[in-house]
Length: 187
Image (tube, rainbow, N blue to C red; front, side, top):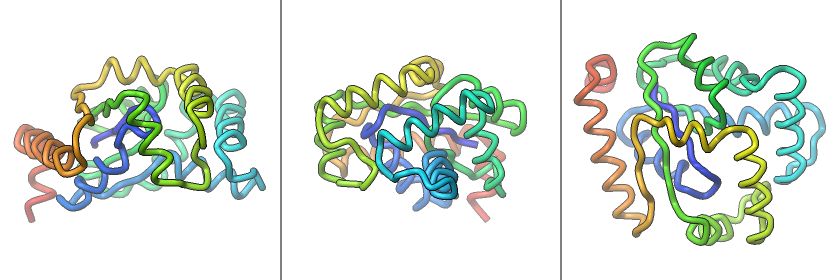
């Protein structure tokens, strides 16, 4: 199983798009949070969802979103999980699935903000101040530590085409190194 981590706007969604085109299936921890937030009538904006995600971690443990996301995993060998935020989530996945590979996506703050503003998602931040608050919240959950512990790091600091090319190179390398992934993708 591949698990993607990175700060907001770093390029995780684009990484997943490339992985899907190569045969991987994806689950998104953020979508799990949004689904549960919607069930609980939480406003669908960044601040409200962030507060809800934090409250659920306090109530049920730091790995609650990993547990809830894992319910949607059907083919672990070729699944890419988007949105790892802390070591407790990583430990949950390692204790329940084999062959965990963590990939961190990095981009600097100004590039991330530009991308977030362009994608204009309903639950996204709308300013540099908003991004810094969101970064601070995610860092408080422990995302910095899982980024630093990643098995692979990919830097997203060029064009989208160049980034997609680099993602494809990295994924091909991972596929070639892990026979269980290769067997499932090459049917």
